[in-house]
Length: 606
Image 1 (cartoon, rainbow, N blue to C red):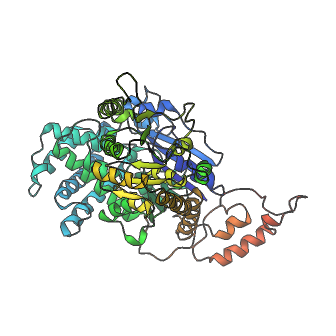
Image 2: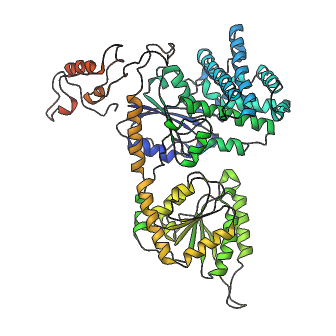
Image 3: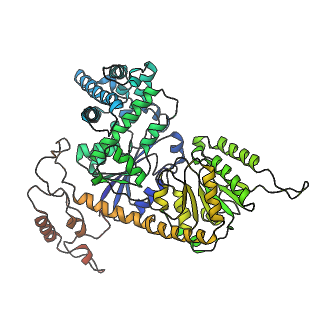
């Protein structure tokens, strides 16, 4: 089976999200071939390079979303962004194409402006009309970009700015959007052009996404947009996996630069409408946890299409810790993660002050490096200063020098050479975040058989499942009380640690993740219709049923047939004809050689 793996800012780059999960997926499913279609997020990510790719990666096509195409030629344009698109074709549009472009942008932007009042996923006639205008404009622009070679300059033109201004001032538009000014129009147009750059890529042809059996988007949003168009142009089924909630960031944070309220509302609704259309068109959606699933349902995902698949993690690296004794001392608390404000280490330090007063021998070891992209260095300095203030050097008399019970350490030193040793250095693992998606550090602690104390954010309760203590976020007193309770009850701590390890081994291993996607791939492709004879032929969803493009028997017997099954030919008849042509199945070929007329054995597509 040929899978088109779609990523945004992750695999195959050495830095990025979901890169480890994607790599395990590709390496763990050797019977499939993967074509990689990757979007990069920054020049720094490009400079960091790629991870080493396995042999079953057939092709890699990349494109940057961080640079305007004119600049990409000077920064080393990666594969997948053709030179003919870099100049943009907005000035070369004929009169008919200009009318088409204006009509499609007007429909899309009017849908976005109207949706800021109704809200995506809210239901109702107004919301449905806004979504209909949005999707009509989106697909119209995609078809125009495919025919004319891109929309880069056209989307940044003055005509687009005037269309946005007219839509924002239209009767019935909400007060927030209605009050937008010229800088707001310009900022929204820039954000819109960047979000729609995947429309102008050269991936939508018979040698690109049209050649795959299934598109698997490793996240929603920009990564899934090429898969949405592959379904539109070629009928390729789309599978969407989300381990986090990208929509949440669009609603709560402004990327890169401060934006006004009108721009934030417009961009948030654009991404909400795009997510709703992706969920509607996807054949299956696999959220990484229930927290993500609730967001997907809020934006219109059909419950019948949702299947929760937890991200797989390697349990073997923590096996010696989970099966061994507590080597870090029962009075040691451990925190592990990226040091950034969302982890709320200040609340943890205030909580540990209460713990230390109740248990003077307790220690807190903080393992992690500052997050360079989120003011990590300044936040680490603030936490160090707070620790020095809360815990001045303790001494037995006026002339002795004591030790601070709080330490900030990085993994990789002589005392803690690897991650497993960090978890082994304490008896209790603490998570104090105020924002969290899928808590990876918590699962790692569970693999190590450690009792945990966590804040109730993201998917924490779902992951812990009663094997650890959970307290409200931003509540140092509750966090301290839970830690003290476990410090004073070693038997309870041991029971919780053993239960946590058993739960993690049951739900969060790489093996269970691979088994789930192995079955999902077979099921989706098995129900996919045959491809159209020509890409330009529209797919009629209400037309007669079509036979499968490639029956499973063809894959088993050897090389796939040269083309799709003809209409009216049953799968059984095709299978019998294929057997007659091959004579001998590939698995029946002996070591002494290949029989005449038989297909050669090999990995091939599966």
